[in-house]
Amino acid sequence: MLEEKIKAGLILEPTGGKELQKENLAEEIVRHVRNHDLDILLGPEWLFLPQGRMYNEQEKNQIISYISENIKSTDALIIPGTIMWENNTHVHNTAPIIQKGTIREVHKFSDGGTKYTAKLRGCNKPKYKNFDDPKTFKWRDYKIGIEICSDMGLLIRPLQNKYLKDTGQKYWIPQMMEEECFLDFYFLVSSGIAISGDRDAIPLRKGGYGLNSNGNIIPESMVLRREQKGFTFPQCTYSQKWPDTQLAIEIYELTNPRKE
Image (cartoon, rainbow, N blue to C red; front, side, top):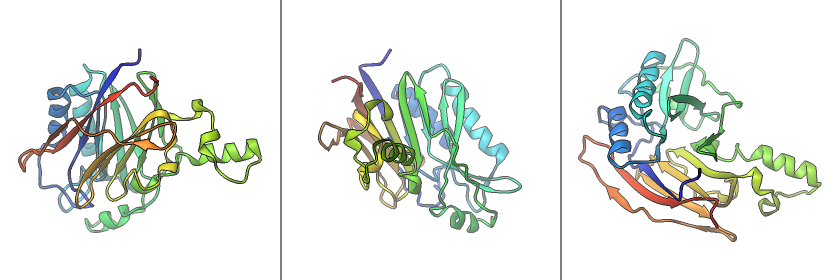
């Protein structure tokens, strides 16, 4: 069943490759989901970045497990930003996808400051990348896509290539694509790149939503909706600047993307 209303929370914190002077981030995320009865929570790139070092794999898994265990009684979809961590061979910039006990991980493919951020913390290992990460998946029968910052545009390339091959056209015309190819929701986890920058790189169906938690120097959240012609920009219905020890959040109330 597809809900009439969907409540989405976007974390509003400046990350920019710098560690937040805040503790208990995982607990804060769980608190937001519970207190605001959120269906979706999205955080920025580099939200989980420890001071002067990298997380190890065990610590990364503990963060994800804590959130998963404490929201599994809900059907919320949680993408809490990215976690910077290292193992014996690589540095990883990873966005967990958490829903009802199911955990997936998407790793940033392009560099986009990842190696530099790791080097500042004494880690000179090569960056892990896997183009076959599950960048699209289903949630509540909605088709979802996710990209991390400078990866924006990779998700749509297979659709572009197939369209050009099937039609013999020389140019990409998104309006001519079948609706089934597109997403109901597109999430951009970023720190510096805004979802409004290249809207044709967002494979959204008509009525679909793009959500962006951007941990820029001046952080911003943004939601856009694809219309028959162009986009509209829903405004947040709730904005809370928490005390310095807590996470700021903006909340948007969205309608069913498939409802005309």
